[in-house]
Structures are given as structure tokens and as C-alpha cells.
Image (tube, protein in one colour):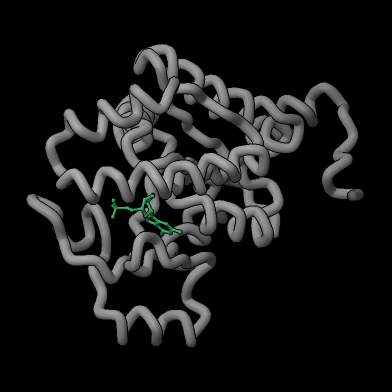
Length: 212
Ligand code: 5GP
């Protein structure tokens, strides 16, 4: 379905810096909203229900699957994660831009239902850097880090299915790239035509979208 709002999907292996980049984008751009996912994993640290995630039991999550409440869902490292239809469709219909921070399996499902979704993959600059970022976070035990690195290989093998690739070597440069993708999407004919309908009309430009 075609909505007036843009849908951006950001995926990356753990440690590539996806969350920090999306957080910085949201702080800079008040027209982009982050969708809050549902998950069966337990809250970590200071995480709050309804802020980072909607934390759900496996039973409730499975009920939502059965009720077709998700636009996508996936099993990521043993826990279920999903994007509720409600979380995005209303906002997109109102013309807001949404960013989803989800794994590659979810991103590819989104592209099937939202053909205009913009898929962005964040890569680390090297294996050494990815490992050192995971180690320096100090969040995970050694075996968890090894598992994240093994998963990263599998995840990065999907990068060719994405529309844009950002290499997060220098944070500021990667943020600039992410903003550029968002900005370019807003300059596409279909988006401009919708956002600036009055300008198009005053220039007597026919409405090709209406006829399509
Ligand atoms: P974490 O548990 O560290 O917050 O997230 C683990 C992974 O699940 C990350 O790659 C994150 O992007 C992904 N994830 C978070 N929400 C969703 C979602 O709604 N759908 C999918 N497919 N993946 C998600």
C-alpha cells in the first residue's frame, strides 16, 4: 500500500552503531518517529515498557501473530520481535515518516508489504572494529560476543538486498549519510508531489500520480 509518509528501515549487526545513529537522527529531525516494537525478551537495565519496547509474554506475542497484528516479526537470537501494524500504519497514513530499527529478516518482510520502504544497512568498517566495539561496550560475556560475531557474518551476507549501505567508521560521517538518505527520499517526485501539491498545481503540472 502507498502511504504519504516515508518508511525507513535500519538494520545492522549488533555493535555496528545502529541504535546510536537512529537516536541521533531522531534528535535532529522532529518529523521522523521511531516505531516501538513488541518483544518476548525481558527488559534490560533501565528499559521501560512502552519506551524501548512493548514487552510481551510468548503467549501474548503468539496471539498477536495469529490475529495478524504484525506487519513483520522474526525470531532474533531466540526471542521474538515484531512491528505492530497499529504502530506504523496510522502515522504513515497521516504523512509522518517512520524509522524501524529491526533485524534483516524483518526488513525484508517489510519490503514485501511496503514496496516504497527504504532499506538501509549499517556496516562496521572491519571485523576488528566490530569486535572491539562489542568488547568495549562491556555488556556481554565473551561467549555472547562470539555468538554476536557469528550472527554478524550471517546478517552482513544480506546487505545486497538493501537499498543503501552506510559504513559506520566515523559516527558523524555515518550520521551525515543517514540524514542524506532521509533527505533524498523526501525529494523524490512522489513525495514532493504530495508535500507540495499547491506548488505543482500553480505550475500547472499534471497529476501523474492520480492517473497512475
Ligand atoms: P535487542 O534485544 O538487542 O534490543 O535487539 C536485538 C535485535 O532485534 C536487533 O537487531 C534489533 O534491531 C532487532 N529488533 C528489534 N525490534 C524488532 C522488530 O520489531 N522486528 C524485528 N524483525 N527485529 C527487531
